[in-house]
Amino acid sequence: MDAFYIILTASLFAISCGLLGCFLVLRKMAMVGDAISHAVLPGIVIAFLLTGTRDSFEMIIGAALIGIFSTFLIEFFHNKAGLQTDAAIGVTFTWLFALGVILISVFAGQVDLDQECVLYGEIAYVPIDLWIGDDGTIFGPRALYVAAMTLIVNIAFIRIGFKQLHLTTFDPAFAATIGISVSLWNYLLMGAVSMTTVAAFDSVGAILVVALLVGPAAIAYLLTDRFQTMMMITVFVAIISSTLGYYLAVLVDGSIAGAIVTIIGILFGITFLFSPSNGVLMKKRLQRKEAQRLKAEAPLS
Amino acid sequence: MKKYLIILLVAFALWSCGTTNQENSGKLNIVATTGMVADVAKNVGKDSVNVTALMGPGVDPHLYKATQGDLGKLQAADIILYNGLHLEGKMGEVFEKLERIKTVVPIARSINEAMLLDDPVYQGTFDPHIWFDVSLWMQTVVEVTNTLIEARPELADYFKANADAYRAELADLHEWVINEMQSIPPSKRIMITAHDAFSYFGRAYGIEVKGLQGISTLSEFGLKDRVDLINFIVDKQIKAVFVETSVSEKNIKAIVEGCAQKGHTVEIGGNLFSDAMGAAGTAEGNYVGMVKSNVRTIVEALK
Image: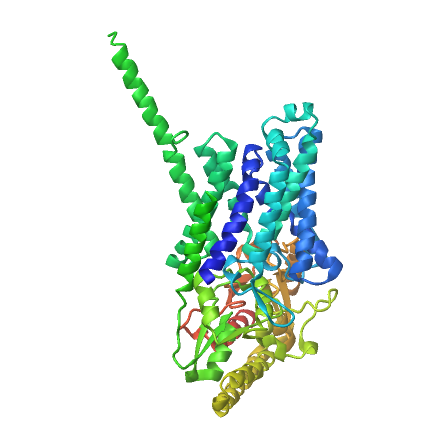
């Protein structure tokens, strides 16, 4: 069952991240996942300073609150100061990370405290990190429940708010004129992103989450111009890369997260070269054909 | 679309059910996290156990990430031994939960809490580097022996005899380290290392220890700390600073240069094994060899 649990957990998180990633890629905010992975540091430190424990629960709450705060800051700088989103992301997460480093050196230099050892999980532990009831009944991997819950919340959120999210992504000016609050939906989306990333950090680690937010959506973006199709392809790529990635990890006996991200990279490379609409090689071929046609049609010299 | 997904998932569920590896060689299968923990198990179990250490030489246990193969080893294990006290980070938390359905033992729990170094401000966050005090590490042998006896009661006498022999060896080692450290003149008993792993060593063998970094590898070194440390080295005329096999030596080199600018030459006294042992097969590849190598390096550099 191990393989099944790992692939299923990875796939569920990959779908959650991928669906949100579609919006993020189109909004030019794809790196917000990376930003959150750094920005949560002060949240962890403050949670530790307040509670004095390094247990997952307190760490996740601290991280989630700071995650939402950081996405709030990013939106705020972007909206109110007119700063480009990439610059707003950059300023926010570097500042928060630095704050975390300073908090550690001032208050907790003698305590082993950083995201790597108190927050980021490892997907290989999924089958042994079980949810055990008080009477000793084993309900199966804990991360699987978290992943399923996260996916349900995300799908509900996207279904209910699809029109608003779609409009504020593609045409914020038009959305505003018909009475949709652009910033409200931005905040809601960012809130969903922070919740998803922090839940996923705890279960499967950081690098995988960052890659899942960007990779599948970017691949789908190269393959289609229709948004619904893009989301479909993202889901498909998410599942394929989780599955192939797991077996690559088995083959080389390496990190599972690393292998999944490698597969995403390879799939992206293939798409980049061979995508029928946007692939580099396909474009070259079209250009060549076009040139030949022009030559044949106009033999002037 | 949904239909394909369901077919795909069901196919994998069926396929993965069929592949469970069965290994049974009659020996107890023990998986340990660090090399030091594995060494205790090897010395108590000898021929009757198969011991695997997850973390190889030069690995920083705080940052270790398990591979797919590790998962198989953990599941095939009859007994899982780990250091505890948050040395293994998040992995330790998983082990804590696993304890309810498998024999999983944090060997540090055999040590009385009063003997552990606690954080002065945040009570209960102990320094996990217990293996540097040989007399403290010796106590973990009891926990390991009891665990093995519980798994194989028929071999109790064998385990007890092995444990006694190993404890005697460690007691000798403890004496040897004390004697060796005595050969350093008292005024020179100060060691500077890359990260704060040697507090137990300092307490047990009467040497002042200063770490460049805090225990966490993220607690960066402040500018003022750096100036203070350089002044401290120059004032006390310290001859050598040490690098560790599992921590980057960049920071400690900066200190050496800082001292050079003040006209005081301080050498890099050599490599200490802190969070991981040497490669298997070498003299430093077991606990006793590792401690001896560290002590020799320290004594030679500071004498």
